[in-house]
Length: 172
Image (cartoon, rainbow, N blue to C red; front, side):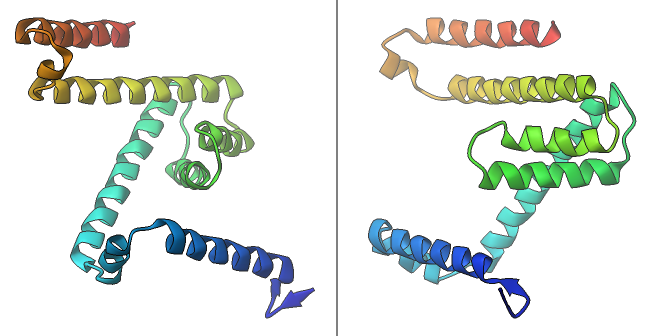
């Protein structure tokens, strides 16, 4: 049965989701957070949205470069697969959901499974290396050695050796 061209089942699911979201906000979110949300700052929102889109653009370019080692794929197919994968990562449970859906879409476009699996693992590896590098840089400039009860020299030595081992591992 349809109401205004939309399935009653979909309307029912949407109503339940909105009710649960409103209930969670009412029960668990502090009143200060709600007052902040009532005062939207359009400039901050636009900056955050722009940075988010820019980050996805860089990730799409990385995906294109990684897959470019194996097969030439049109940018439109990559963009569609990446958008579908990002949507899946945001709304489906689990970390690998978006990768699997993205690979499935490109497999339907004629890309080899072997190339997709290799590209997915390589992209994950690069992501982990970048994240670990950022952590090491932050640790280098932080003052966490006081909490670890080690001397500054030993702390910086550990960070430098960790960074070098990351570079060696990335070169393999």
